[in-house]
Image: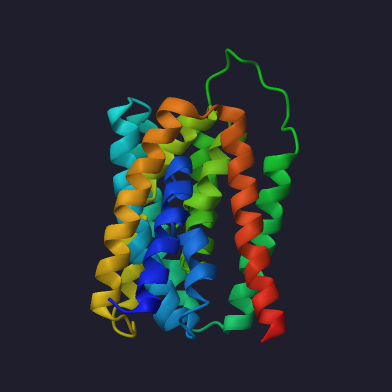
Length: 249
């Protein structure tokens, strides 16, 4: 393993711990991170990120399931809807300029950071979460996530919180719900993807280990409010670093 791959694997491990704590899969952080090493967003970064997202989400789901934090009914329903919608976004990405895709990514990050750091509407603590609204929202979320090559987790997790799920439960549902859509969103990339298999192998090992560890840390030690703040901080930091890199290049 050469020095660049080692740096990529170590960085991805750290990002996978953080994303595993949130049940997201690592793609939302891996896209700007891998962009430091790989020049082609659509044919290198996105397919590799989607592959990593599916694997890391799977291991995060395992960690949350061991702690009984997965609500299986909404998780399965959201998986079905997002798995159908996500490939449409990936297909559109094949015909969309990289500048537009990065612009959409930044807009999504700004919106999510704002939602995570501002108090939401007061809800009746005894009211059931609005699964129907979550399913409706998951369609555009999955399409947009497929376009960005990040999997739907980084948009779905805050959406679940907004419709009434507790943060830890939202993280557990998200981990299950984004696994299959990540792989279905990868399908339109298969004919054009440019992935080094050795590099991908090391990154998959690092991501799987980090995401499982992150899920277990959340299950045992992290409170719901802290989980929301961690989400907002992580996406802002990763995106800020990418913006600085793009502007200085």
